[in-house]
Amino acid sequence: MNMNMTKWAINTRDEKLTLLEALLLRVPTAPRSFLRQLCKKQRIAVDNCIAEADRPVQTGEIITVKTSQRWQECLEQSRIQPEQILYEDDQCIVINKPAGLAIHRAHGHDDNLLWRVQDFLRLRSETFQVAPIHRLDIGTSGAVLFGKGHASIGQLGRMIMAGQATKRYLALVGGCITIPGELSSAVPAKGNTKEALTRFRPVTAIDGYTLLDLELVTGRHHQIRYQLAAAGWPIIGDKRYRGKLVNNIEWPFLHCHHLAFPQPATGQAVDISCPLPEDLWRLLGSLGFTQSSVSDYQGLKRNV
Image: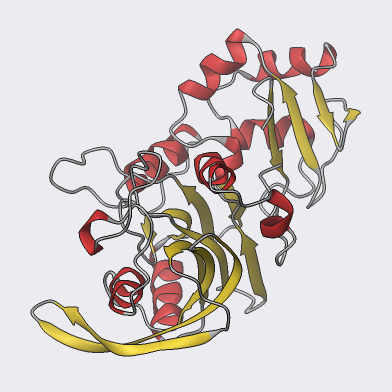
């Protein structure tokens, strides 16, 4: 990742806006005059070509902004960074959650992803209700779907409950797993137990560690963490389930890298990939995993 650049991809919500409008949508703390000035000074490019403020943008194009002190100040004033928005349309928004951040307000976690999204939308003067449709543990990073407005929140929630969404995770575990399979077992659930199903496939393995791609079929609390530990493959860094600690990792190596769901208004499939965070890439590298052995697997590239 180039620290002298800010990069993100245009998606459905930004499409056909002018470059200036797209910039304001992603960085609402930046004054319009300042963004125009950046364009005039040729500090903003679209697909590596210098672009004017009035140029329309299209889905898939990459916006690149050369950083400056004032640009950094604008970014710091926003609770959601441009590249964190993985997908957005009028009914929903998908955010890349960092590890260590709760989704809802919890004891000791006043700062949370819901509050950040609400504050970000307020900066845009968008005041509709917004709510997360599914959850990730505090220590898990990756894609989180939020609904916009009461109707969309309800519809997306029903889709999740009906199993119409696909959620896939990457987990680094202790052990050598060479063939795909399923973990089907009862897991603890609010003083009781509930049946849970997780499908797994090894991505790559080295020296007693395996990177797994997991599909969450049911959605029980701590399902992946519990089932992997019970199978004898605890997640690296998962202290609660006796996972090995490597290089002072702070959180379990668990990342939601893929999310697919039907768009509420049209039913069209929305398919989203979420890149591994840089700290997890570094941990893989320290253990001897090569970037090509991971990124060649179904497009798991680093962020743009």
